[in-house]
Amino acid sequence: MPSFRPARLAAASAVALGLLLLALGGCSVVDRLRPGSKASKAEDTADAEQIDVRRYLGPNYCPELRIYDGAQLMRTYERGHQGDQDFVVWQASFGKTARECLYDAQGNLTVKVGVSGRAVLGPKGGANAITVPIKIAIVKYKEALLATDRFAPSVAIPPQGSTAFTEVREVTVPSPGRARDYLIYVGFDGEDWDPMHPTGPAVAVIDEPPIQEEAPPPAAPPPPPKRTTPNELPVPAGGFVLSQ
Image 1 (cartoon, rainbow, N blue to C red):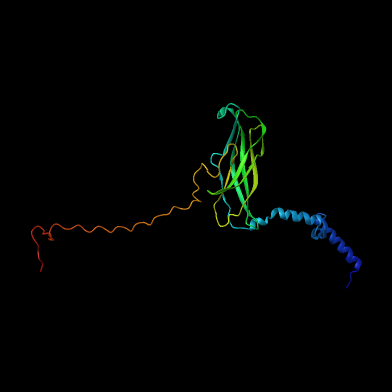
Image 2 (image 1 turned 135 degrees about the horizontal axis):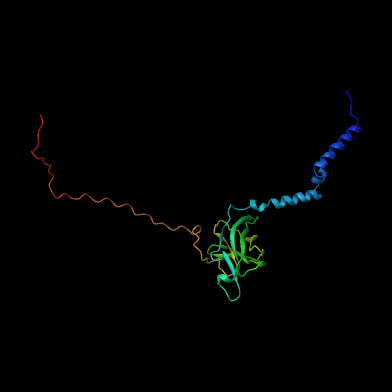
């Protein structure tokens, strides 16, 4: 039986290693596994961006997000023509909203709020870059304003006259504890609106249900009416016929 010499083994090993390095894109296995290497740091950074440990902390609770009634649409007008539809320069409206809740080890809540919308040119508008002021407010229902975030993304409206915009913001508030009474409001920051006194419908999902009084017991049925005539058997015409 032929035997392999060390030189042949070394050559075969070198060929196999070369093929493996080519398959890995020129990056050696040692570089991938060695702590502190460029490849290791790049992979650690990618993993850190994909996995946020805050998603796995805290209760399974994320406050409801609402677009503030009266602040869902914003219009700008030419000077001196406020409220005239024929002199609208541009208007913006919200489309979709989303939120994600993250908790730290102390129980503090960070809410990632995403909003998307569209800006449209009006009769007096032209292709231009505009700033759209937006406000996010988180409140403890009927008790306190916990946090406010104001920002104004720049939106470039093309000659076609319409463009979409998307923004994601993070707002941190104290731990909700066992209470489930936080609310998130989003709206355009054109006019001052008070998240503690919303103008929209009441938040029925947070209000305590009304106390329902116990129903009274059902009334007893009325007694049968008293007979005013004596108990008499009806007599058929011709009298009774007795059969034998």
